[in-house]
Image 1 (cartoon, rainbow, N blue to C red):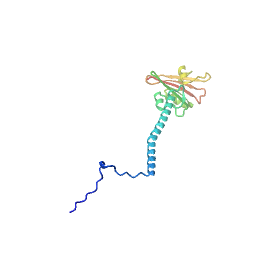
Image 2 (cartoon, rainbow, N blue to C red):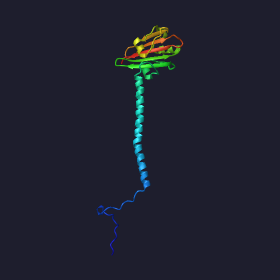
Image 3 (cartoon, one colour):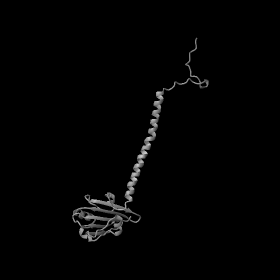
Image 4 (tube, one colour):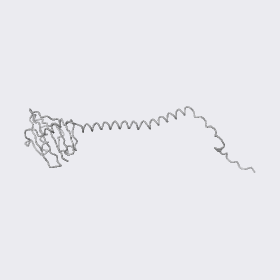
Length: 196
């Protein structure tokens, strides 16, 4: 009787070195290196590009905010609905030449605003703030200090009319000055002061 044949086992590592593996073809080496380089480039380049774009957007956003906060005079723009609500300034949507400046400190917050409108819109605005044209008195109601901050000057040849609308805290006090030199196209200057 012949003994059964056993499968041949691989030689033990202690028995000596294994046969060398066949050399990798040069084409495969080059292709593998290119793929590795592309993967590394993507892993490093994409996040770096994202960071660069984010930094630029953040820097630009910071400049925009600084321009708003650092404004020294009234600039051409509409204040937000929230600002108009807080300072109780119901400006007609058809107003033209709208500009504003907001200042804040520990004691008071002020919204300086200017805009042009029609005679009818002036009556609507005055009604919206709780007054009317008959309540306006000759002269400027905005203080010289507030006019200086806003960059406003009052031409003595113009027809200026004004009113101060006091309100208990926390509601704002509003100094309204209207240029009625051209009655069909009046221009309004308002300083609304709120005490937190």
